[in-house]
Image (cartoon, rainbow, N blue to C red):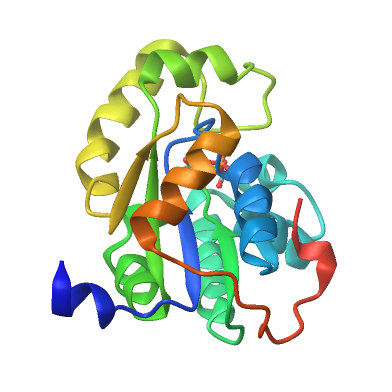
Length: 187
Ligand code: S3P
């Protein structure tokens, strides 16, 4: 990586991965180790909408949700030194990927589809996770794009091991010089 690695924007870490890969679990643990705040993009969207994601999908449709997702991502640029969990589809959009690469490092939490299905209960809270067959199709179409992340870690490991692997790979150091993020944006 060398020259390129050290010239990457290192003020923010974006956790990328399929639904159920552990972004919202690992995010706060990583943030604590770094002394940075944790932000959850889906929670930010829910706050601004005033209701859960599945209601946004039902009432406004997926394209409106994707627009809200890109807007929320753009807003993240206002803060430095944060760990952000992205929704599973956020990294699919080329404009979002560009924005993420400008703002910080992306880390793919790599979990098999079997692992995902084990972890995600079909409780209706994830509108795109309807049945195993459609999940398999979506997973296969997304995997090559997740692999465009700057780093990837095995997300089947224990949470503390995953966090250590992220710190080791990114070589990020704790630095508490963040700039006041409202604490209620973490889940
Ligand atoms: C989505 C994943 C969800 C949420 C929305 C769409 C996706 O987030 O953003 O339901 O397209 O994969 P999680 O990955 O946190 O479940």
